[in-house]
Amino acid sequence: MKIFIDCTHTAKHTYKNTGIHRVVRELTSELLKISLNRTDIEIVAVMFNGISIQRVTSLEQQEHSVFVIINKYLELVKINIKIEVILSKIKNKFINLLSDISTLIYWFDSNAVNKENIVLEFEGSTIQPGDIYVIADANWDLPKTYYRFLEALKKHKVTIVAICYDLIPIKFPHFSSKKFTEAFTKFYSEYSTLFDNVLCISKNSVEDYNNAKKEGILANDSTQVVQSFRLGCNYLKHNYDLELENTNLEIKNKLINKKYILVVGSLVPHKNIKAIISAFDLLINSNFEDTYLIFAGNKGWHLETDNLIESNKAYGTLIHILGSVTDVQLDILYKNCYCLVQASFYEGFGLPVVEALQHCKPVIASIGGSLPEVGGDFCIYFDPTQPTELYEALKKLLDSDSYYNHLVERIKNEYRPFSWQESAEQFLYCLYN
Image 1: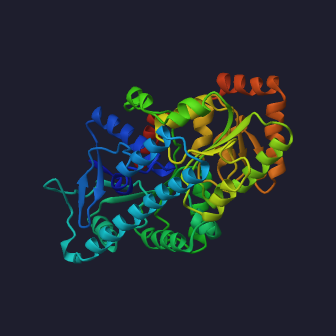
Image 2: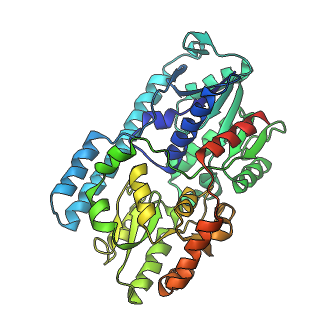
Image 3: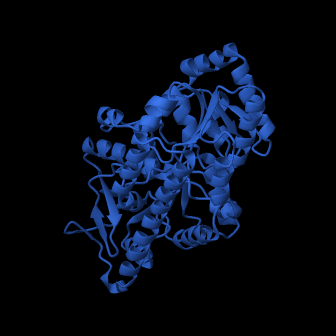
């Protein structure tokens, strides 16, 4: 039996490294390893090409040549903060433009294909009834032929499985752009009729999915199974030493030896950046002027959020935005950070929480969505609508070395990290049960 893992979005956008892209890369890599030692299943990573699927041979993150030029310039030349901001914005606008152009070309090419041309073959062989097709990626912007392809698979008795990361654009539409909310909602309302099995990344997301079914937002098929599996938090060391040698100079030389609070993730509204900035301002005013705030995530998603950070008087001195970072760079940032802050109003999982805990770092997280489920009693929690609570939690850490060291020791002794291998095994268990 073949289990096809659809990695279309990650395979088409290898220069991106969002949470979903990282999950797709790590989970697929472990599933392929497991497949090598199994005779009953074959795991195949694939992407949709408009009429059928083709094998994906690599999901390794690759930085676009334009980004390399900009980053090298920033490393080699000392420039003022205004020029750096402009170059960073150009870089992120280019990311979005590349994504939009490739999606448009793909959409028009694929929609020109007639329904009769949908092909249920893979490498010369017909896809068999009983095979499993897993939508593992952020495929909600694919063309209509993708629906026809999945519909044909379902009629051919292939089991259709979807990984649901969260339903934030449906549950909280004000956190996303109108365009994205409409595309996301349309995808789930239409495609959910095809899902035999939905695998969510937390129990909280299972509850959200089932509630959306009851409310009529998603297809309420009584035979559809909705389960959860847990994500891993360790890093698979792909080309680690080589990438470490070539990693960003700003990360290696300027910030690593500082006491910095780390925030991981794209700078989008639901991440509650405003509360983080407010709490950090209070820290500065309380004479914690040797503490830095580092954002490891892309700008360019929400102008108001970008301006909130860039207009702060500490931006460029105590506050830094590193943009998208590789897994190796992120690993370095986790190892050397003082603590992690996850202030989101809502999360479907909260990957940075478990990654920071895996590095034995204190985590201050909000009570939004799945974060208490994921972090357990190892995190310090606060109400995301109350920035002063975040400030008090940070101040308590910074005021007391003994309290800080106690948290670190407890995490070291009691926290049990969940590996990507375990995540992949749990994922397969859910497919069979």
